[in-house]
Amino acid sequence: MRPSVLLAVLAVIFLGAFAFQREHSVFLRVERGSEQAREVAAATGLRLPEVMALHELRGGRLDLTQLTAFAKDFSRARRKLGHDALAILSVMWGRELAKGSLAKAGGDSESAWTIWRGRREAITSVRFLAMVKRFESRGHR
Image (tube, rainbow, N blue to C red):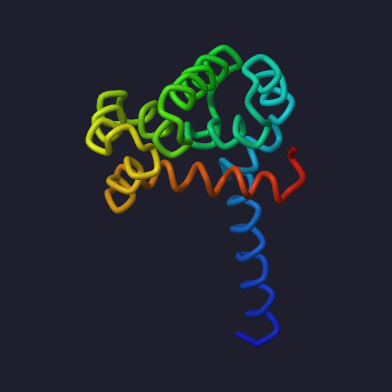
């Protein structure tokens, strides 16, 4: 096979894989559904990037009712716990987990988050915080 033909075949394979990845990207699916997230943000008082990050955490497949309920749960947890990362732990892994760490930390939310920061459950909180920044960087305010 000639090098130019091989290069063309590789380019077609690469472009096909790239198109497939973009079509199945949860982040891009959530971004395309930003109008739904805008409605939820207005209904819950959360910022648009926060709602979009919540939706991304759940795979981008929530309908309007489900996303609104999830966003309200997060908002309540954030008010009670005083920390976004603890609120995500609460809604994704269970309220007892977050409340227990808050109690261990004597009510200090930053110290409570420190208890969880290195554990596997914390990855959802870290992902949420990163996704909020990523949506903000793409102009969703």
